Image (tube, rainbow, N blue to C red; front, side, top):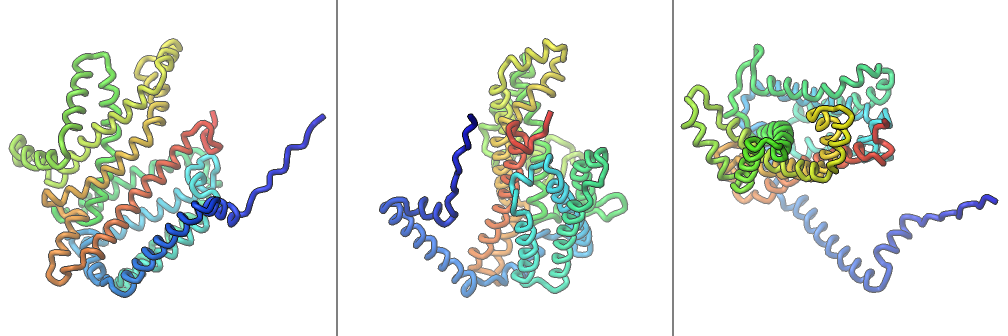
Length: 413
C-alpha cells in the first residue's frame, strides 16, 4: 500500500529570521548588540558621505582616474570599445538566460534576473550624476547602459531562433573583442599610435590584469604538467622556476624586470616599461597557478590515465580529454583566488613609476587643491577593486555550478 509523503510546511521568512537571530536569550542579546553596532556605523557613514565628504576631487579628476593621460582627441576609441563591450555583455547575458542548458547565470540569479537589470539601470542613471559629470558624458553612459539592456532583451527574445551551429561560435566574440580592444587602445591598422606610457588609471589596471590572467593560466598548466613529467630536465626545470618565483617578492621581480631587461636586450628589442611589468606579472602568477593545477592533478586517481591509455589514447590526448578536465575542476577555486590576488597585486605598479589606478590616486592627492581628500579617493578605489573581484568571484561560482556533474545546469553526456 502506497503511503502519502508527509506534508512539509515551510516557515515564513520572518519566522525563520526570528528563529536564527533570537533563538535563545543569549542569541537575542548578541543579535541586538550587533544590529545596533551596524546601524550606528551605517548612520555615521551616510552622515559623512552626504554632508561632510567633498566629492569634487572625483568629478574634477574622473577622466584621469579612468584613462590617465590618454590623449583627449583619441578617447573616442575608448568610448567605442566600451560600447562594443556593453553590446557583447548584454548579448551573452541574454543568451545565457535564454537556454537553461547553459545555466551559469541562471545558477546565480535563478529568479532575480529582472532585479539585476533594474539595479544596473538605476546605477547607470545615478552614478554619472553623483560624480557630477558633464551632461554629454552622462548621456553617453546612459546610452551605453541602454544598449546593454537592449542587447540583453534582444538576445533573450530572439536568441532561440539562432541556429545551434552559430550559437557555438558566439563565445569567440570575447577573444575577438579583446584583440579589437587592444588595437583601439594602442593604435595600428590606420589608427594613430598611442604609446603605453600615456595609458593610466583604471584602463591600465584592467589591461595589465587581463593580460596576465589570460596568459598565466596556460603557462601554469604547462608548468604543472612539466613538474609531473618523467623527463628529468623538464621536471627539474619546472621545479626550479616555480620555487624561485614563489620564493621572491613580486615587488623585487618588478624592479628586476624594469632594470635587467634594459641591460640584457638591445635598445630596440627591449619592450616598453608597461609590457615589462605585464610579463613579470604573468610569469609570477603562472608559478602559483601551476601549484593550484598540480593539486588538481594529484586529486585525480592514477587509474584515470591508465584507463585512457588502455583504450588506446596516447598520453597527450589522455591528459587533454580525461585528466585535465577533472583536475581543472578541482583546481578552479584556488586558480580564481590567484586571479583575484593578481588583480590586487597590480597596485604595486605605482611603486615602479606606472600610473595605474593607485598611482593616479596618489598623483591626485598630491595636488595642493585636493590635500586631505584621501578618504573619498580611497573609498572609490576600494569600491572599484571590490567590484572587479566580486565579478571574478561570481564568474567562478557560476563556472563551478556549470562544471558540477550533479548540477541540473551541467551539460549532459
